[in-house]
Structures are given as structure tokens and as C-alpha cells.
Length: 170
Image 1 (cartoon, helix red, strand yellow):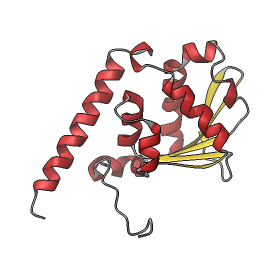
Image 2: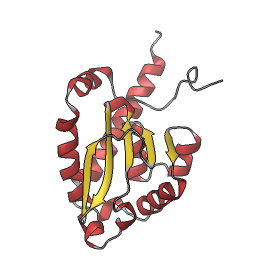
Image 3: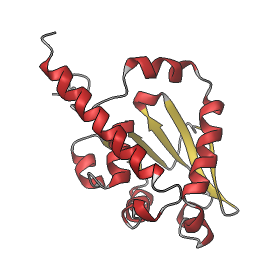
Image 4: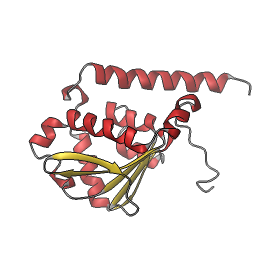
């Protein structure tokens, strides 16, 4: 079976939430994301743990949130901008899979082999990102405990919704 006929079993953002995200301009999505990421990774940025992204360009696509952006580090700050046509690395996933990765519920290898996390381009850069993310404990990040509670609540809601949908006759 090819990708066009294979349906992922990973929960996706409900259509009711996708619609406003679809029509919201990218800049209104990327500006708050940049502030959020710089807050969450402030300690890692200060310690130069993200220097492997310095002047490198990756594109992240969150398919069910209709969000696609480029990410780089410049002058000690994460910069989120409109997606680039030919990034060095392209990462694609859903909100659910990214929440699993952030909470440690699933590791990146499992998500990759289930095709819930796709990467194309510079594999060495992808490995740097993988190792960086695996070296962080969500409990040590700023905005705790709200960040952890929010991510875990989101996973539970998605899992419950998926189980309920499976029980519906239509």
C-alpha cells in the first residue's frame, strides 16, 4: 500500500479546531510560537545547546494544525518564520505525535517507524534534533506544571475521543 491509501491511526485535531487554524494567517500562528519556544528553551539557548541550529534551516509541518514554519537559531534566539521551499531538514507530524514526543509517551524512533513523524533532508541535523529532544526532561522546562499538565490532558482527550469514535457505528 502506498501513503495515499494508508490511513494513520494517530488521532488528529478535530475538524472543529482545524477550521479556525486553517484560516488564521501563518504570522498569527508563528509569532506566539516563537515567543513560546524561546521561553521554553531559554536555558538551553543560554547554554548554547541549540548551536547546532545556528544559521541552519529546518521546516516543521504540523499537518492537522495547518501550521508550517521554518526554525533556526540566530544570535542566541530561536527564530520562527514562514516555511522555506527547500529547507535542510523537513519534519512533518501531527499535534498528537508531537505531544507524545514532548511528554516521552513515545520515542522519536517509534513515531518515525509508525510514520507518525516524517523527516526528509539532512539526516545528521535530524539526529542532532532527536538527541537534543531526548536529552530534555519536560519536568525541567519552564512553565511547569502547566505545560506538562496541558500536554498530558491533550493526550488523554485525544485517546478518549479516538476510543469513542471507534465505538460509533458510522
